[in-house]
Image (cartoon, one colour):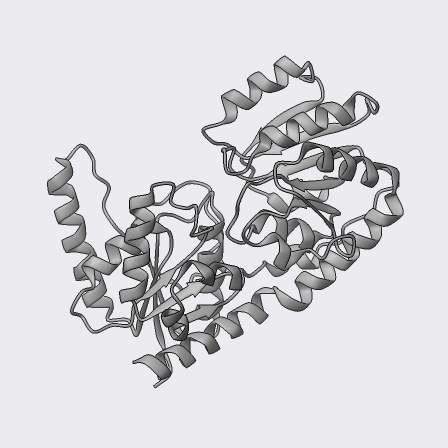
Length: 365
């Protein structure tokens, strides 16, 4: 029997790429007539859009309760929610919801899908948590990956339970009309300000480029634990007048449309939504060839530029090349938009997701 009732679970509908994917998949499936439920750990002010056809359920906050007592109540309530929803399949996103839902749903005889939303070799940062995740994955009905490269983390005998479905990109971004630039003025990056994203590399590279091109500006969109260190770095390099910390923005489309060149400087990724969204708009993009994701999106010098991870020389050269070659930027930006539209448009990915899930359940359940 095909899956008709889907249960997604995640922390919230804000800030992260995984949450963005949940909002698109859940909304897309609900709009197609499926019975879609979504359990959230919390609601926040600035949320990704979600279809009103998705049935939302909210877990209570801790509110000063004893930690052990709170988690016992949380697992009990989560199990009760799952029982009452009675889904055909459970698909939690991010490590904590995955672990919690796995425990809460034991012996319910409901197919459980383990999801990978980052590089499984390096995330979570704790080696014990990565080992725990791998064990849960191997006990799950299926393992939902973003790229083929991520499958190398799991033993070969698990290959029959693996499905690979890339992240979807909102049609709003693909359909926007990006105006090509005659010259590059603003360079930008989007994402959590963290060691993983390595904005330090981008700031240092920008400082070197800025020495010979004082008209350039660098905008960093996002927030995170590294913000203070990055601000100190900017001050020490003497480029405070050229670098802006924009924080999180509610309208990513407008921010991307105002940008001339996008740079992803990460040490590792899952499948970078920020890069996919920049490509969808039609921006020229530079990305480190980090594991995993960028190489599935960019063919070097065809629809963007790939550079070695943590290589400041290559990043400086790539930025300079784009600044000096606006026609190249126009061509790779157009090619990037075409690739996203043909391969990662939301409707295409949702159909693939539905097909892969049904094939997996038919084979394994």
